[in-house]
Image (cartoon, rainbow, N blue to C red; front, side, top):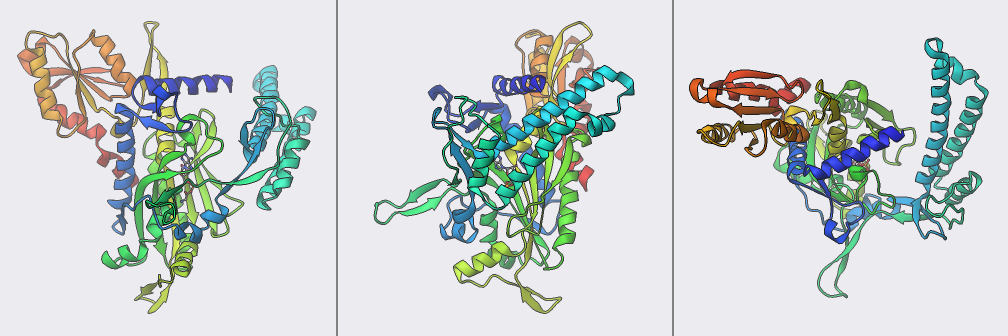
Length: 514
Ligand code: GAP
């Protein structure tokens, strides 16, 4: 675990050092849980968004996109349930004056028990060597059984309290388990209170006439309130989907793990409108299809798993998360939810406008059911960064830091490097850049020794380096160096475009899922 923490710290500092992610407002000491994307980060992020957008809208004839405003009529959030129920249970420590999410304190406590169990298992595995039978050890070892029973009991009380929104039950569990504040080390806790996660602001100039509006906590509602507009103007027939990418805001009490949990973040959401009664088959379709989208990136199939929800939101009849193995464990990156007709019905009720679909095949009108796929751009970014980062020992005893980014997502696709800054090599290199730049993000770099330039490109994940040397002037060939294998081959300048295109195009990625 400590080793994984170290790796994660290195990834965070690498992201800053190489212009991927900066703490927001850094010269003013930062703003908690808000981050800025740098010159390489914005390219990687845009490529992730493009991959999602094209997969949704190009590979599905019946999905179209929109871009709705962040500010929306405040009644929308009343209708959606966010004003009344988009809450986290919070608790304060009176000594440190620090605020925590009560559920996170308990989850962390459960994770510590899990760690103790894992340590016992690891110790035994070392002691018994090859003959170790983990399942048998877990089923018979007294210490492990004791810890497991404790864990199960805490977990049961925790989920009972959460399911019943029993705030006193959560507090009692924190007291009974003697959970202390990580800062003060004391158990001087306040009551547990509900805390609404939406940011509020005022719209309008005078204090009297100003209206309270919210920064949207999800992009989905912008889709629901535009359902009729899109269905009618696009003459869409059910089943069809509406996709949107945009910012969302949540006043998270516990914001941590870098860009995993932010107060301002970005979502890529798609609402798929279906005939009532057909939602389960579409839920299954989208669950499988979204996992295929993830796996096509080639970051390792074993790094993904589904987490089906046992406790469903009151409007959902099925929900699952796609989790990715981050350095701090398997974590939710995407949610797939069967939302029934809850949202459209609520907007019909609160707006007084009829939101129905006339199904010509059935010759009847109904409120469509909805399957939602919702993925955080920043979490996706983090999973790509974490799985790509490697400190690779080299045969010569040195270590290189390399980002094995999926090539179509890389911020820079190829770097053109003249071996020396004279003899006409820079001119030829510039000419190659001028040929390639219309199709690929291409960098020109002439400073420092060639080995150092390769390392810099490895560190930002550039799949190809093209080196121009004296031979290039004579026979029109260059050296093409591949990032992951570091293999170099002599190729014709005229062949560069095709060689690079094959590996870096988004189309090649999209073909893998179709
Ligand atoms: N419309 C449904 C919805 O918003 P959600 O599970 O609350 O569902 C969907 O959020 C996705 O948005 C999550 O799977 C996660 O990737 C991302 N997300 C949610 N809260 C986030 C936060 N505070 N920081 C970064 N990403 C977040």
